[in-house]
Image (tube, rainbow, N blue to C red):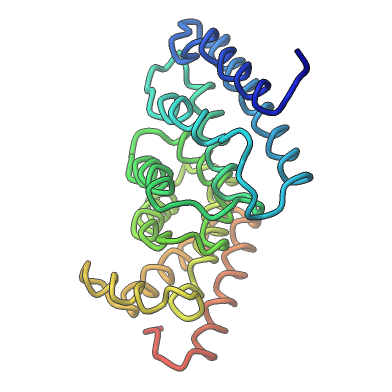
Length: 253
């Protein structure tokens, strides 16, 4: 029997069933190796889809349907022996959802990513996981993902904590400022402005308060002892000033 698309897909899912749940692997190094192999596989399949499929073509292998549950389980696994695998899983999920070639997904799919993002950003005792998320999600607000504005409060809260802590790593601070900078123009420019403003009103925060929080974060970054952090903070400040000048509405700074 020759290989057909349906037979390849069938054999693919049989192999997945044979392999079982990789999160049941007890050894931390082997677990990390398995997650890394999954990361490579997702990248290969994603590139193949990018090269061969039109934007609206159905996926021959639904990557999120196959891998999302396993990756999420790894992301929420707080076993210290599996930390490396957890960090890799966080990186993979962020890459899938924030890559420029990412196809618009149903909000029910996006909600899993948003729940993970908020869970990590509101944690206070997992600096390595937070740093990994920041490094992997720098473009999270640049892609205009549906409903992504719900991530703003946890992002600003975590950013404030990072800049107030003296021991925060340089790259975490730089990545954090990159994300904060991308928030600045959201209320003014994105397509969801009306729903965004309604959401801010619903949670009891005004645009002035939003930009006030951003300004406080930038101020902390501008006075940091690390020159690279200061440089990125000044770039964010420049963008904030330009937004204040060009905006038709007062932004409270």
